Length: 341
Image 1 (cartoon, rainbow, N blue to C red):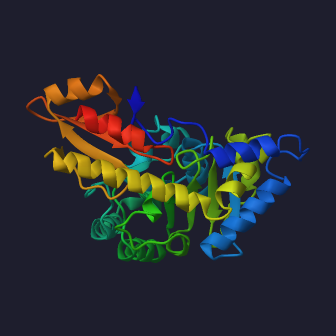
Image 2: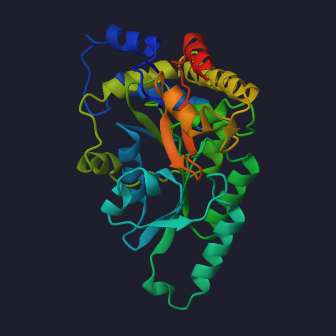
Image 3: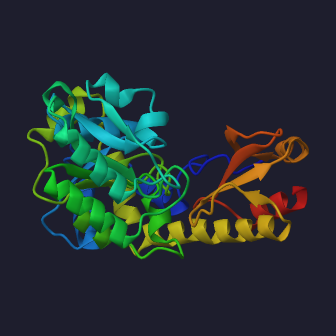
């Protein structure tokens, strides 16, 4: 059965996997102190245009979100996120488990609206009893969002300015960052992400790696004893070379961007297939996640041959489902989908 269930259903990109095999016999120090991690960090710094940035590698997205948020917030602070934000919906309370509240704000197309953020903060600090409330210490956004939508450069700039005013950190979850950067409808570059955020990460798990995320601190603001905190929270890999090798290869000859573009190209072709057959979309996504509304007959028929993710139920027996492309999606996969829809 062909699967569009998610963008991490396959293993690693062949070049990444080959590099792991080629370097397998090399004896290296552990916990990310190896030569491959150092090389990968240098390449990432060059790619973001910031030679002074601090880069660390963690094992997965949930661990990364949890470690970053819990180490950058004080014990009286929480993190602002959209109601649909990944840390608020799909991370099993991992953030709250660290003792920090996720402060929900309404969203529009999966995004925080700068004006809504501003109004919330004005309201919070105008409340005379705010000393009895959880202080907002960070803003969390993902790019792309859970609905495949993207922030514009102006939106990032506005959110960043609001964060500066209220002395909060801006954290950008980049689990699918490659697909956002290579979208045909974005004006945001990797350099912009680094410029406007205080910390972000470059997702590997969903963009060609077996596992791993590269965390980047851009304002000389890496928390004290950060590696110790990573280990304390169970997110430090003893064979850190595994992560270093993968990111070193992903940032060689623009591989990360090339395979992300492939995922976008496949998504655009998929989107056209659904449009040509008059399927209804739940949201207009410019990235590798496409959200299609299926009636009961379509849901049953397509589901017999194609795997997809169920997103939410609508009235009249309709269901919002997600079809996700990735670096590993092939033309044959699209033909199989085209045949059944």
